Image (cartoon, rainbow, N blue to C red; front, side, top):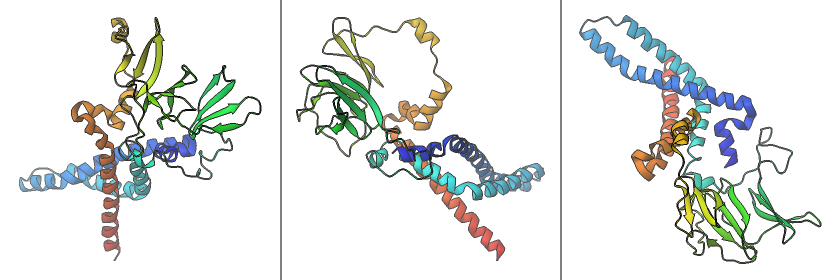
Length: 313
């Protein structure tokens, strides 16, 4: 997943790669506009010719658009295809296909790091009672013996979303509270049963299902007299084991806290912006748009090459 993510963002080649992807974004806008012009203008020109209306300027715009649409499309279609196609795997449902897949780092790219811990370490927790350091990584949960500093992987692994761990704290009787976009769980390393902290029911593994759980946990806090609240990405602060509502945000904060342009752009780019209209079906926007864009780019290049070869002959 990390490899696809860095290819899509350009980060795989560092800052130059990210700037190149920004350029591809601008080229996408240009190709879209010139494509729309070429699609509509010929019929418009014909209608104006029948009515004997001026059309010289429109013809110039149409010819210029076609010329540069073809040139830029020919130069960039490979990169655009990679950009669009890689993007469809970074959101559900196609994210499920690659979420737990591992590939070797691509040589001579930003992923090819000498540091073996690069992008693997997620969180650390020192258990004073056991004199043990727990290490959450991309490859699972480990424990470190402070005497010889060797890492050992726990046989029973807690459910943690590919997006990382968000709650990691000791609980009671040797258990730990583990939270992520998979949910909030009580995990005891020596027991096979993992408990869903919200429902108090045993956790059922959903390998192959969606990469998020019923609750997308971003945090957990104790407020007042041991009143625990779970912070959900969508629902906000939810009481656990009691009915005391979380303190309301003041109107001053609400009125003066706008949403950054970056966040608005991200919500649109991921399709979440349209969940108000399409509900849960918004997750299909990204894969359908990506497949559509990939098809348009490849088919456009094929048509251009056929026409170009015909002219050469």
